[in-house]
Amino acid sequence: MCYAAGSVDQAVNVCPMCRVFPHSRCPHQRGLCTNRTAHPRFDVLFLKNAEVDCFRGCGFCKWASASPKAAGWNNTGWPGCCRAPTSGEHRLIQPAEWRSVSVVHHVPIPSEVKVALDNIPSRGSSVPSTSPVRSSKPPVDRRNSSASAKSPAMPIPSKSRANGSPQMTASSVTSTSSRGSGGSGGSGGGEESHKRRETVGENSSPGRKQLDLADPLTPPRRNSGPRPPAKVVPDERRRSPPSAQSPKVSSKSSPPVRAVDPPKPQKKAEPPLSSASSSSGSDSLRTESTITSDGGFTDYLSDESEAELQRQAEAKAALVAQNEAEEFEFRQARQALANVGLKPPNVVRPPKVRT
Image 1: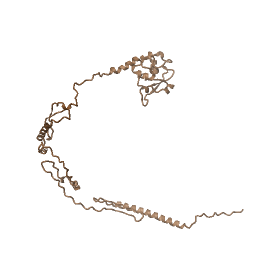
Image 2: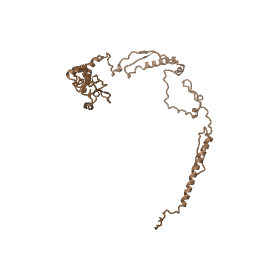
Image 3: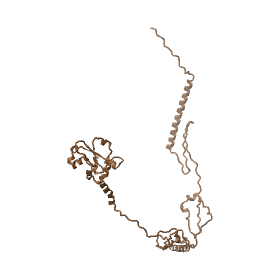
Image 4: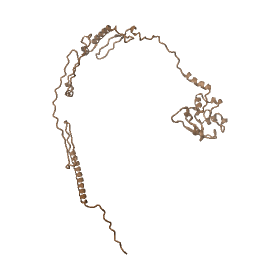
């Protein structure tokens, strides 16, 4: 939308494109057209980067080039940009621009243009309308699931695994429509588990065969009684190298091997804590430095450290002695002035000189 440079409309009205396309901050740039041949009355302020072609550029120059008779003092500007279009000027506005023109100039969209705009999405959509497909499978009644027939068995092919691991043979898995129904498959399940155990025993590794030497039909024994308390391993065992500990053997055929505890190492006598201290000669100040070790090693001060500590102690002792000497002098001076009165002396007037 074009405005006359320096007019009231320019200062009062908001950016026309921001009404149609809201922005947090106006990004549109304005330019000044000084072509007084096309619009001799004033300079025109126009938009450079409007989103709609109708509002981009100087509308007065467009109208002057489209109708040369209207150029000059009778130039009213391009319809839809500088002013609202009349009924005879609707053909100059593209259908895609009518929404912006309607928002900016507050004019209704023509009925034929509105119908064309409403039909654009329906023509462009290529998704066919399909009716919902009904499945021919009857619904499953969950209430009568216990009386439903079993589905046929599905064979599962065997899968081979490397490194001598057991191979599972083909077995039949029967699926029922109800998880709750199952009382008649007890004997069949036992035979199937027996066959599976035999197959596993034939194809398993030697270590696995040793664990399955017992009767496969007998269930594994479980101790229902209280377990014996776990043996507490002393700290010396944890400190010993891994080679001293005997490996644990978990097998049903062989008796449990009892772990042999290594001999306890003799405890060495811990040396007494070592300390090094240095103190000054004065009673008021003492510098003490202590070095404590945990028995593994002992820190000894180097000659440079001892000399530095001695130098610091002597400097502090000299400072303390100086302070004491100054304090002693202050006390003596105070005692000497104790008998002196604080009353100011009488003012002695000078004698008058006679002339």
